Image (tube, rainbow, N blue to C red; front, top):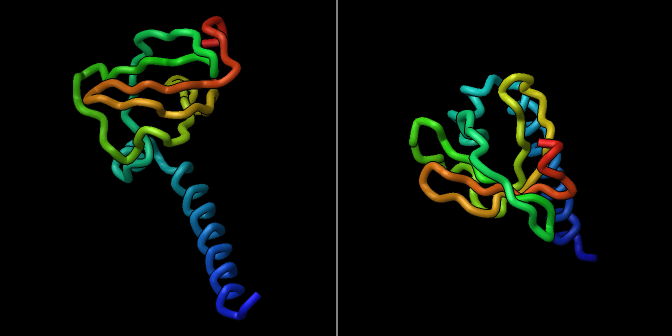
Length: 114
């Protein structure tokens, strides 16, 4: 491999490491800081769920009707965290966002677990 390609690969590795460190620092911040950074949404309400061949689709709504910011978009991986514990409990994929509603697909989760 050429020196140029090797230097690009090294730069990408450094960038990935820096992003991982920044992510670790940001998730330690308060919810309001994460919301301001576009990293979290304000607390949402689970309005319904439905079984899906890829897991379970969870439908969330912003209770006060405010639109959800675009820091998280369709295709983003998300952590679902109950407000009561602030400890992530589910990992999912944001599949759809419209105004104040979001659809998250979680794998291997039954409605009973929710």
